[in-house]
Length: 242
Image (cartoon, rainbow, N blue to C red; front, side, top):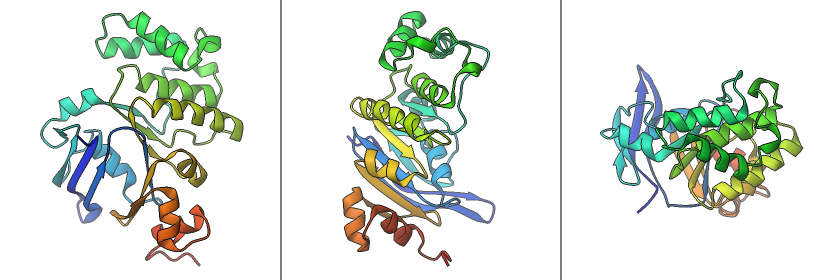
């Protein structure tokens, strides 16, 4: 079974066509990166896949569950780390994790929080209020919170936005470990991040999926000399880049 099977999904906001009859399959396991310039439709697509927004037409199956008809079942399968760091600032890192575990109805929230603390090496900050943590620690905590329920599919929306290069590389190491246990869907504007982490990449433009493949395949497909040049060639179709 595929992790995600998107079937001609479309989303309109009035006269604006945000996602246009997009079809895609994502196998279980590994990391799939979704790239595109601002306004390409990435966020809208992710919101539909997470069950946060209903499609205008078409559907997507997440491990066989329909986002159009079985939103509650989809919610139980996924974890989401949004672009805006989703932590309670006045709670400690440990309390944030316990709160999330309780929200999912886990029987032993403390035990699960301790497991996540160990897995993400959060021990040195577990008793510190989240508001006092650096951006890198907050992003790590936000991703850890998305994994409390042990989701089968994890959505990471710009997980390293605004981090310095060292914090970014540390977070990459955690993401590599996560993708060994769950299917990860990543959106990012850092092309080197997608090239380094992704098994496959999808490029969106004007609400449509214009190319899918491994980073090396996209370079070959576009005849470009680098992954950045390949992205510009594919995503920039119809856009004035002068």
